[in-house]
Image (cartoon, rainbow, N blue to C red):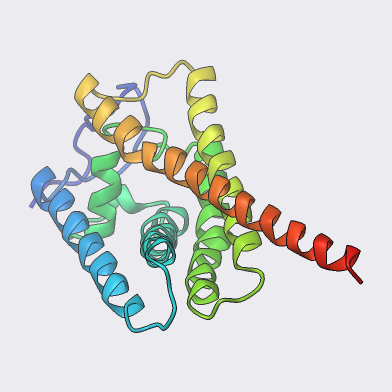
Length: 221
């Protein structure tokens, strides 16, 4: 077992982390569990959505995305927000291990940066449940499904923008190496840039088409 209070590996090296306990799990174990768990969630939703009548492939893909990102927000990011002492855990707690590992790419997490905690708090508490509501709305073809998805995506894009912009303004020097910078800070977050952007375009077109149809019907009355 790693001894409590050892020097931490994060940048800046003078970051104060009283009671820091080094990682118990390896990078491959941490990333592997997350990857397999995410894959199982997506596969489950894809299979489940196949039993919902009259769903297009696009809607099924969207349901897979929303269940994945919703659980990520609520479980993974929720743990970070509500467990400020995760780096002090003296026994192997998987979610704590995730954030100790991810902090190699962005030490603002282990250092409890106010901007990061705020963004993740809103994401976990509001956007996470909203993502699960989007799954239900798509499956049941609720009239608000496109507006809801558009709203969530704008929130995700705003949060991601704040995440990157604040890092740049603070010097963008929170990674232990270029590998962790690009693997965790850049790659792990880029999905929440282009995927919400595509969904915004999709929902925008759907909403505009619905409004046009409504206006045409109104004119013919």
